[in-house]
Structures are given as structure tokens and as C-alpha cells.
Image (cartoon, rainbow, N blue to C red; front, side, top):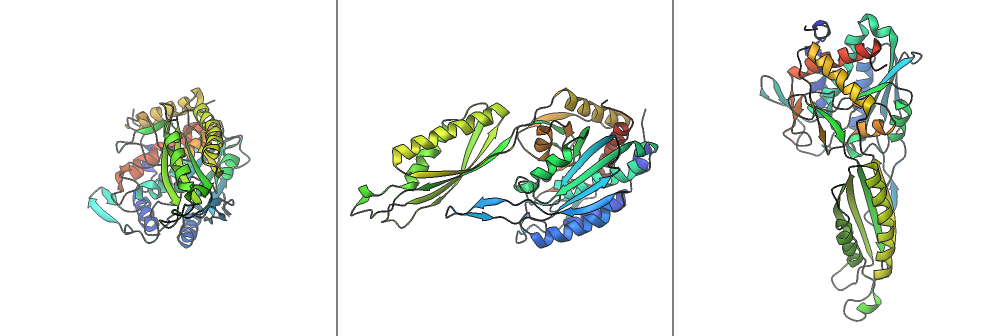
Length: 398
Ligand SMILES: [Zn+2]
């Protein structure tokens, strides 16, 4: 039996117009002016919902410069919408307004690849997903079930760089929710959802040695670059099926005739389990003690796991099953698979709230100038979400 009611309430043309307008605004995570313009446009669009719309200041974020010093990294404001906060049953819907394309990146325009495929920055990841969320909620608000469900919407400005300025807000908004939906693009162009996810962590290690002349008194120097290189090799030796480690950037050094007294090593880890992340963090402390002793240098560590691995427990699986059921009603065969990628769904799952985090559009080649949106998926995915939200309002997951 096909349930066409939800799809009939979706205005596909309005969705496409919004995606095109939003994609035309550059929202690289560091482009504060672009993010401010996007936030205004979203605030206006989301005022179609019967709730309060608010822009929330980003949390302070400290980053480490190439010289090892700490500095405050600015971020854009986040959009928060609250509808029926007094309701007993409430859900969280999240998305992000930033993209990976800085304001000076060559990829800024939209191109039609064929009648149903639009190439453009953020069309899939995830300005299209934001339109899916908004229009699903607008369609849901026209159903009889709407009064039974409250919800909060969060559109953050910093997902692409790890949500460090919004992690606290995500956790606050997840608290007390029966379920969460996040609008990352589907894992595959056919609409397949992302199921379990690994976690991620980022570290910066600052090495301080002692400079000396490379010819006259090299023995008096303490080479920070050599110490960092030693750590890189020892880090790689910690890899296992449970964790991968990617030394990504080594900065520092000096002229060829100087023993370098300074280096900063940046690396990323991808733990598959919470325990693997914790075990790595512990092992790193010991490695740094060994490196300090072996090279007579000082080290300072910054960072850690920012997004814990996302497991799918029984309650989360029930939400996947609900999405599958709603898809079947609409003639959509919704499947899922695990992925190594991370997103705000990791943060939400860490709060114990069931989440499906790829409710956005079908498309592909994200984070590249080939990023594309399958335009017809705007309406079909909005219909899917509208039906899932309606079922949650009617008591699903109880
Ligand atoms: Zn995304």
C-alpha cells in the first residue's frame, strides 16, 4: 500500500529554489560574513514553522598555531528553532550550514549536469538536506498528529571542522529527546543510510628542543624535528584493526645550519570503539614520556577524541526499522551500511539518543567540485522524513 499523502504535501519547486539560493551563498566554515548571511536566510525560511527562531553564539574554540601558540578561532552563529517545547514527546533535527569550500575556492557556481542532477557547492552536503528537513516539518505540521510532538532544530555553522563550537549545544539539545534525525546526504546515491560509524580525534603535539649550530656544536642541540619524526613512527606502530592513525602535518624547523628547536605535529585518529580511543589516549601519554626522555625535548599535547564512535543499539535500530517501514509505505526501499565517516550523529548517539544521521538528499561526490544533488530526491526524502516524524508523533519507538 502506497502512502502518497506526505509526498502530496511537499512543494518540490520551492525546495529547489531554496537550495539554489543557499548554494549561491559561500559558507566555508571560516567565512563568517557568508555564514551570517546564510543564518539570516535560514532564520527567515524556518519562520514558516510555528516556533521560536534564535541565533546562538558559537562556543569559544582554542586552536594551535604553527609556532605552537594557542589562539581563539572564530566561528559563525548557530540557528536554533524550538517548536512546542512543552510537549511530552520531543525530537531533535540537526543540520549544518557550513561547507568545505572556502570563499576563495574556485567551486562557487551551480551547473546542471542533466535534467535531474545539479552540481554546486553544498547542494548535497547539506543545503539540500536543510531543505528536506524544513519541508518535511512543514508537511508534518499539516497533519493531525502534529500537536502531539515537540521538536528542536539545530543548524550549526562548524560541522565540517568537527563541531567544536557547537558540541555543547548539540548535547544540550539532545537531552530528553526520544529520537534525532540528522540531514547529511545519504551514504550512497540510491538513498542508503549510514549505520554504525567510527569515531575521530585530532591532536597537536608541540615539541620544544634546543637550537645549536649544525657545524660547531650540534651535540648541544636538541632536535625537535627528529623527536617529532620518532613520534610519527611510534604512532604508526600503535595502529590495529581497532584504530587507524594519520600523521597529517609536521611544521617547524629552521635554516639548514641550525638544529631546530621547534616542531608541531598534527594527526588524526579513527577509533572503531570507545575503548580503542581511550586506550590510544593513554598510550600517547606514555609515548610522549618516552620521546621526552629519548630526545631530551619538552612536549605539550592538545586535543583528543572529538566525535566518539557511533554504535547502533536496540533503540537506535528501532529508529532505522521505522525509517525502513515508512520508506516501504512510500515505495522507497531504504537500506543501510556502516561507514568510516563521522558527523554530528556521532555526538548525538554519544548522548544515548537514537539517531539516523543521513536523512538528507541523494547525491554524491561531496567535498569535491563534482558534488551533485539528485533533484528529485528533495521531494522523496522530505516525504520520507515527514512520514517518520508523523509516526514518532503517533507513538512509534515507545
Ligand atoms: Zn555534511
